[in-house]
Image 1 (cartoon, rainbow, N blue to C red):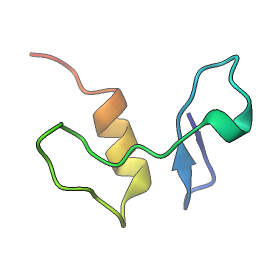
Image 2: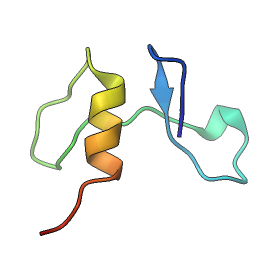
Image 3: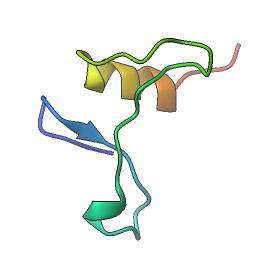
Length: 50
């Protein structure tokens, strides 16, 4: 995961930077969230299962 506070993208540790992409939804059924990329990625990637 890389972020400059405005743009946020995720990829694997061995992937080149052009293979990273934005995380646009928290859950599959959710609408695309455009204005909160860091929050969307944090909750989408690091969501705890209860």
